[in-house]
Image 1 (cartoon, rainbow, N blue to C red):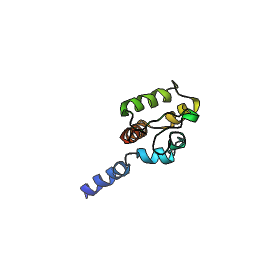
Image 2 (spheres, rainbow, N blue to C red):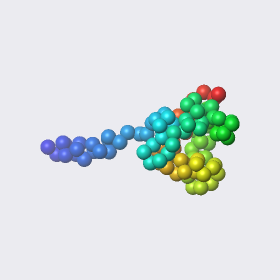
Image 3 (cartoon, rainbow, N blue to C red):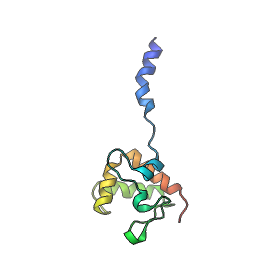
Image 4 (cartoon, rainbow, N blue to C red):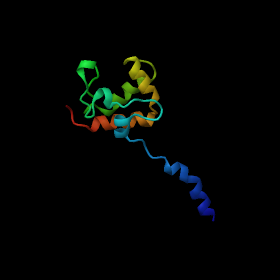
Length: 105
């Protein structure tokens, strides 16, 4: 019985899955972050006409650092600062890992 009580206490923690970078890139998150693919493209190639840089194949740490800076209101444009602010640190890490794993355009 005691073991069951411990397992039930751990269940909510275990149920929280790590965020999927691909899901966030394609669909955004429930905290207001828009899908990254809307501007940076599904394959992360970017859209030069709108000023959205290519992210595919860039170093994960570089992408994470830029998202962290934008979340603090530094760099980027107002839309990117808003999106970065809406990402949790785990979500920003997942997005950075996803883009870094994509082949460069």
